[in-house]
Image 1: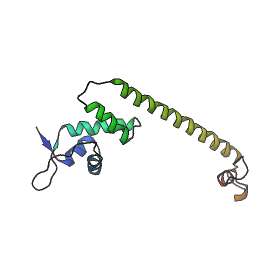
Image 2 (image 1 turned 180 degrees about the vertical axis):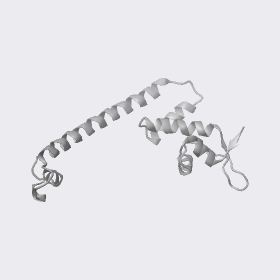
Image 3 (image 1 turned 60 degrees about the horizontal axis):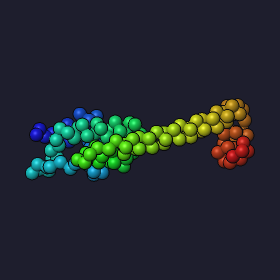
Image 4 (image 1 turned 120 degrees about the horizontal axis):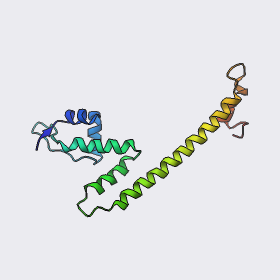
Length: 139
């Protein structure tokens, strides 16, 4: 088994060295053996694992969710895709809710911007400030 340094793992995974250490502390990657002088000796598989974690994060999964996915993925028992399906379906629902929330925020801001002349008014007449203070504009 070829072993590699933390800096090589970080560079090959396109993450910071501190990210590798953080994943190790969180139990997302196994703690590697160390040399007598204390240097970590990672297996090549650590790079693939970190890339898996990063891809999962890119899809919106939290580190706790990724930990569950890794447990399912690493398990020696018969694979049941229902667990992964449920996690992914839940994530889709979260994303849809966030999209709805962002669209709502956007509509409110667009309406406030339409009401704001941009210049020539006092602070007390500014619809954006008034909304944020909870005054007028149905705050």
